[in-house]
Image (cartoon, rainbow, N blue to C red; front, side):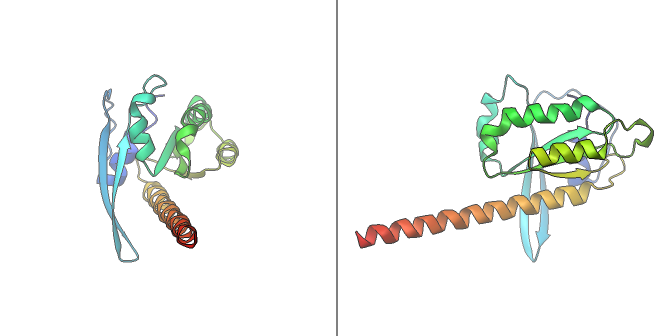
Length: 178
């Protein structure tokens, strides 16, 4: 679904910029951001993929190497929320231990809201995802959502690496005893 604000959210977070201009994108765009947490600096990359049912396989390497997936829908479009279930099912083979979050854009359109918070909570719960309300236009909620998402993705990567190192060390210990 187009016009839900995926690119606008990335522009708002990475560059504190918003434009209502809508262009038809045909290729993947990469956004970069540096952030600091507990005196550690992280360089983040967000890949804004033009994903369709037909090109998931050709984007497999990008998806596999990512540490998280952000699903985006809007408050003013019920179909965008329904499509989250569909996209989650299509991407489920790639999710593994990745951080996943649901970003619900356009909370500034108070008179046009057709998606309820209960619907959002239900789908986020079913898909075991965090969910965030935000507006790319006003910036409300964007920084917190991306920051939380990034920190959780980093924590999962760190935890997965720790588990791999523990598994490797226990395997090496077994090999030495044999």
